[in-house]
Length: 423
Image (cartoon, rainbow, N blue to C red):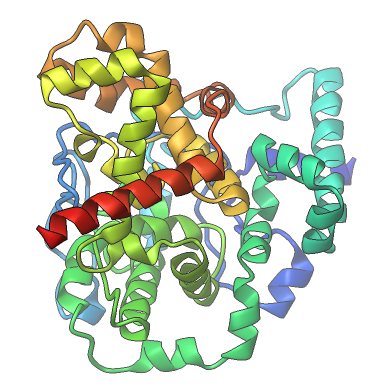
């Protein structure tokens, strides 16, 4: 009964604990975080500017000002983490976001202590069975992936158990290898007195997940941790430095791992997942991805592509943030986590497929709209579709896309750019 109660507490996530394995915590301790988390609240991003590098705080955000963490030399304390958390207890969804009034985006809890005992037992048994399968997998994830590629892919697409995400993500990226090899580097970077990006990083901190309790306090653990990671990466990689959009990536990771783990996972993403090209000067990979997306839209949703051309709408206007933040800027968090699970296993294909799948689902409506209404529909309706992550992911996986096709489009993009530069 005691074990069931513990599993039930994990399922309902009354207290968020990013890394659930005691063994892992002992090996690599992290600060206790008293914020709630385990399912979803979509952020409200209505009224925001959609330009690539101008993503201001939403007018309704509680942190919508220029105050910044003390380490950057500005800002005043807005109350301790515990004071903030105590003041908003009961107002949070299961991932720790301030819930919108009347919102159902976080969905019902799987079970509660008051659920029917038979239903409660069934849910707990399912959770235990699923977690046991994953424990067997992550004992040697690389070997399991090689021996059981289809099962591995299927389970990643169904979603990693939330209690194991931090471990699985790091294992997939191999980031802990670098952490162990360069065990003192992060501490060294963090302790350096100056960084040319300090001011701009500090300015953007309050604009990153401003409705999440971990990042709500201006001088709290979350904002300070985010500042440390972004600043350290800027010092580590001068070619990339700091660019808006990186904060959403790091903030998401910080909900599942420590500062140092987040830093090294960010390094792995930049190197092994071609993410650096999204943030370095000129945004070279963003231009490539948007070119590929437009070509794929023409292939998979030709009627909509033709209508977009008539209305002067290009992917730069709506899809840039999908790639830069992997949907985390404006889509429901549960959906974002599922995209990340697949992305870390299969890389960029899932971003193309999900974006195309959502647009295809809305094609019949979109082709009847004019420019402004199209943009509003994409901004509002697509995130609403993603409130059902299974359905939204299914829409994406229904789009057939091969690595060969992406390579072919990349070659065409580089050829066209070469021809233009030679003129």
